[in-house]
Image (cartoon, rainbow, N blue to C red):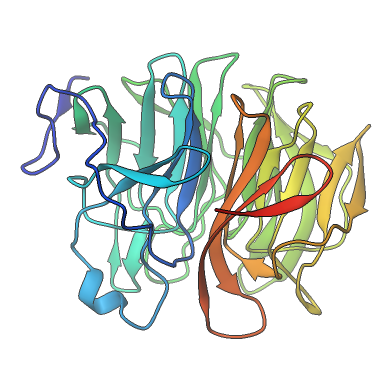
Length: 319
């Protein structure tokens, strides 16, 4: 179905450009990082929510920053209204960032699908998951589809355990069985197995989760689990090893990474960022590094606006 550009979405026909600002991204939680193959940069979007001043920011446009390896540069400031905890993925086949849903407050949740590419932001009009926050999405490179699972579809207690796929034209409800319902889970695409991986989160009003699952485009297969962890992120390390970064455990903030090797989880303790929930992470394929930005202080109410890189051995704060 053809896309429709909303007023102010930035579809100028000139493509995204560096807007020349030196202002760094704001502190936040629930934002997203993706690696953009063509730009060769990690991009940050939906930064700026999660703090006491959220009410002042609701309705402001989503902004996108690019990480050069030394500084953040603003690429686009004319996006749809800012939201966090949305499904976000980079579609490498079509060279667009896909965004679905998200939330700005308990009363304001979103259900649209947007894409950001050469023409800026474009809203795609197609029936699909509808209102969905606290969700996750990952791009299946082998099959050319963005895969969305779970989340919350209203301000109440509706938590679907369904799987949706977006091919750039239409949404397809691909499965209604597999992992139990959850929010604050983590997802990534695993190039080694050509599957989308899902880890942990919260089964609302039931329990915290430490289970892992793999989606092959037809069905979910349960993998080895580990101790429960919520509000974490999942990304590849150098060499493609899946790793869980940040999050919360029953004893507080998670101070270790969890890496998945030969269908078993191994804890890795490396001095670096303080324990935090809902940071954003992405693997920078050009520079062969894991990049992390922001998150919330697991021991307090502070939000972070710091950038870290992990080379497979040690963390380094940048710049």
